[in-house]
Each structure stands twice: as C-alpha cells, then as structure tokens.
Image (cartoon, rainbow, N blue to C red; front, side):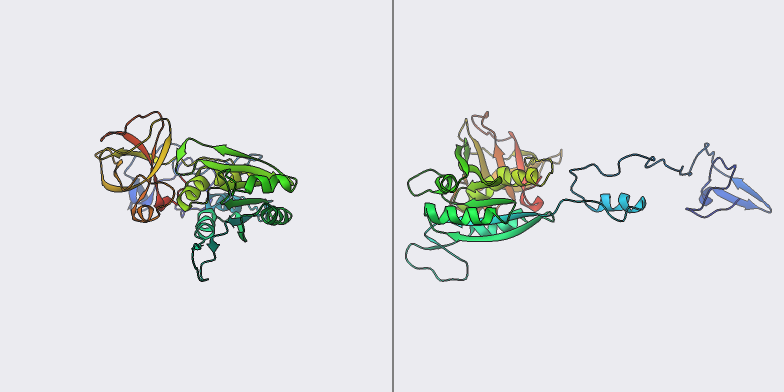
Length: 316
C-alpha cells in the first residue's frame, strides 16, 4: 500500500519502505533493500509517554521547550515572572554618559556595561542611577529600590576604604552585608548583602573588574534568585601560544587574542596585556579573556588554559 510521509500506518503493516528503494513492475512493487520490522514507523508515545514530564521546573524555556510543549497541545504553562534587577553606580566623580565632565569627573561606563552584560529574556533591567559616595544617600537609594526589585547589582564603594560605603550603607538601613576579598585579578573586593531579603551584589568600581566579577558572581547570583541552576562560566580549552605573565596563588583573567587554532581545534592565544582593573583598550582588541589558574606558577608556551570568548557573551 502506498502512503505519504506522516500518514497513519495501515492496520497490519509492519514496516514502511522509502519510495527511493522501490520499483514498479506492472502491478507489482519490487523492493530493492531489505527492510526490518518497524522501519520508518513512529509509534504512539515513543517520544513522550503518557504521564511523563515535558519540561522540568527551574528550566529557562527556549525554542526546544516551546516545540515539545506545543507538540503535546500545551497552550499555557506556569512561569516565573522576569527578575527585576536594578543596576546602580556609586561615585562622586561619576557623570552620566551624555552630560559634560569637568575637573576630576569621569563618565560612568559601568552601568551601560553591566546592563549589556546582564541583558537576558528572563531579566527586566531597572536603571538605579548614580549615587554619591555617602552612606545615607546610598543606603536610602538601595532600600528604596529593594521595595520594587528582586535583586540589585551595583558597582563602586566595595573595597572597604574610608570612601567606600556600600557595606555600611546596607547595614545602616537594616540590611546585612560583608566584604569579600578574592584571590583574583582584576577585581578582588566585592560586597555581598541584602536589604529586606533582596540580594545585593556590590562590584568593584573599576570597569574591567566589575565586568569580570559580574560574569563570575553577579550573574550566577541572579540565576539562583530567578530559580535557575546557577552556573559559573566554564569557558573552553585553549593553549598559550607564548608565555603569559601570571601571579601564582591567584586566578588571573587577562585579555587574549586568538592567533591560530591547533590541530586539535583548540584556539592558540597570545596575551595582549596583564589586564588589570583600569585599562579597557586591551579588552576591546581581544577576542576574549584567558583564565590563568592559581596552581600554575608560570604559564609557559604550550600550557593548557581556559578561554572565555567574547562572541559567547562571556556566558559559557
């Protein structure tokens, strides 16, 4: 019996032979290829059995999940609201991009950078503005935002000096906070806290330090807050084409360029600079960030390292 692709299999049929492997000979059909029982037949329930889970909870839904939900006739599913995240900058010297600067003032690069880095379908970004280096002013802004958002990511005022007020501002307005120093470059001081149960991540003020720490700590924090499984960026295996400057007992994140690919497909990298917290140009000229682990005392040519390519949005 001749049937079209996707048609209901006739009762009693045990296999379907593709037309390409058949020939007509008068009223007969000659089959040129041996076909096993069950070939080219899709059974009811072979993909999804009755009672099975289509999509696990805590899953970030993408096109794959939409397809399987639609195939099962699920028109509506319960989802968590988008996470409302406020992005705040702290610093007396900061001016918004578009305004003029004078004297010691500089443009606030961190809020635009962090907003771009945190942009995701499951996040609604709220502009928390620029706040002065003042305990009362900063605490008032954070506590007001905590009434309307699900999490706060801010930069500046995290290192713990007399002019750094993030931890004190959170504590003054009824929250809890602590400063954490991490053996890494760039960006070792961060503040972790909360006000009214709303988590706050205080990143360093230097832009590259804020970028790296956002990738490593702020984004996983937001994933956990949204009910997703938090993951640290894993990067991909790479090879140092030449020696990389590195301080042992500390994880260094340095801008790197892909020079070529090895026979095994791994990118071979050259270091553009030592990185650090203040220089942005090397990161713009780089293809990504090389991660140099603390257990390696010296990264020699040919050493295996981890590479976080910018083309993946620093999310792998």
